[in-house]
Image 1: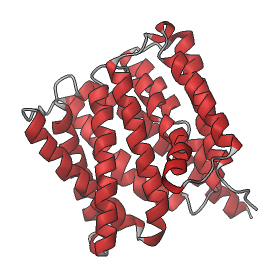
Image 2 (image 1 turned 180 degrees about the vertical axis):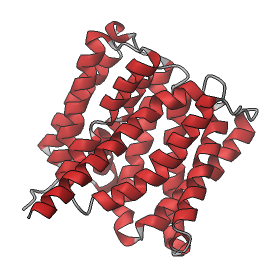
Image 3 (image 1 turned 90 degrees about the horizontal axis):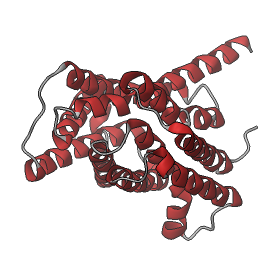
Image 4 (image 1 turned 120 degrees about the vertical axis):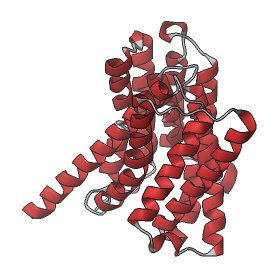
Length: 291
C-alpha cells in the first residue's frame, strides 16, 4: 500500500516537472527569437527532438504500419501549424499571454468533436467554453495590454492543437504511441524546414539563449517529457494528470515574470484564472469517474 502511494506521489511530481518544463519553453523560445528566425528555430528544435527519440528507441521507432505513417503525417502537420503560429505569435505577444491562450486548445476540443463526430457536448464542456471566452476577453482587454497580432496567431495555434488532440483521440488507440510520436515529430521537422526555405532566410546563431532554448524544447520538453509521461501515467490517475498539466500556463507566467519581468496586471491575472478554470472543467468534465 505504502509503495503504491509513494509511486503515485513520485509520478505526480514527475508530471509536475514536465508541466514546469513546458511552461519554461515560452520564455526560452521568446528569448531565442531575439536573434533567431521562427522557422529556423522550429526546424532545429524538431530535428533535434527526432534524433533524440530515435537514439533512445532505435528499434521501436520503425515499428509502424502505412496507416500509422499516414496518421503520424497528419498529426505532424497539425503540430507544424500549431507551433508555427505559436512561435511567430511570440514575436508580437508576451510569453504568459501565449501560454494561457494556447491552453484554450483543451476547451476547443468539444466544439471540434461536435463538428467531426456530431456528438453533443456535455454541460461541463459548454461551461468550460463560457469560462474560457470570459478569460480570453479579460486577457486581451485594454487592462491587460489589449489584443494584438500575436494573440490572434496564438488563438489559431490553439485551434491547430485542438485538431491534433481530436485526431490523436480517434487514431492513437490503434497505434503504438512511440513510433507515432517519432514520425509526427519527424514530419514536423521536415515541414518546418520546407517553410524555412520558402518564407525566411535561415537564421539561427548559437547564442547562450538559442542553445538553451533548443536543449529545453528539443530534448527536455519533447523527448524526455514524452518518456516521463509514459512512465508516470501508469502510476497515477487520469484526473491527477489533467489537474497537473493545467499548471503549464501558470508556470509559464511565473517564468515570464522572473526571466523577462512580464506583468499581466489584474485583468490579465483574472483572465488567466478563468482560462485555467475552463481548462480544468473541460478536462475533468470529460473523464468518467474513476473507481
